[in-house]
Every structure is written in structure tokens, then in C-alpha cells.
Image 1 (cartoon, rainbow, N blue to C red):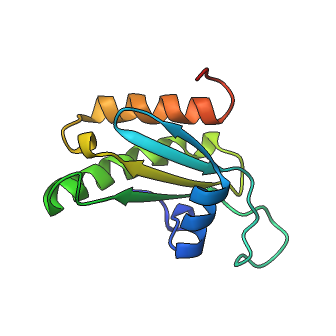
Image 2: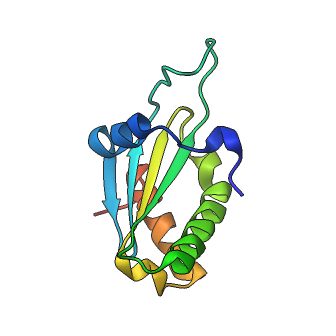
Length: 123
């Protein structure tokens, strides 16, 4: 499970990541990354934590399938959140094929998208 301080919850934060961040598309996922965004809601001078949110629409499948995809994506992001710069906002949007993808396929797509967004991969 993704820790509470690493969860993206506010609508404005989702919008900021999607509208102002960079995007990398893969066959099952689209990942939006807003690097080092400052959090206006966080008190103090410390660097805000990296936060991730997930969008899984009804096009992916029924409620059971959508929740399964969200659980898998949260688990995958938990292991990868430390790779991202502090204060980053990440939105992972599942595409319709994600409901049929297995855990390894989602992991490959997420890794490839993050690598591209962090500057390590080609288009």
C-alpha cells in the first residue's frame, strides 16, 4: 500500500500534474509527471514528499477490475516513489487494456514511462 503522505488526493493537484507536467504514454498506461512542484498546502520549509494518484475509468472494466488495477498500480508505485524528485506530482492513468494486463506488463509499462520522464529513455 502507498503511504498516506505519498497519496495525491486534491483535484487541483491532479489537474496540475496533468496540465503542467510531462507525459509518457505506454500501451496500458499514461504517466503524467510534474517534477519538483511545491506544495502550497504543506506547512514549513521542508521539501514536500513525492505524491502519486491514479485514474482508472470505467473503460478499463467493471468495479472489480478497476479496483484490481488500482491496487496493482499502487503497489508498483510504492517501490518506485523513491526514484522521483522530492515534491513531484505523478498521475498514472490506466488505459482500457490495463484490465487485461498482468502485473508484469503493468510494471514494464510503468518503468518505461518513468524512465522516459526522468530523462533516461528515448521516445
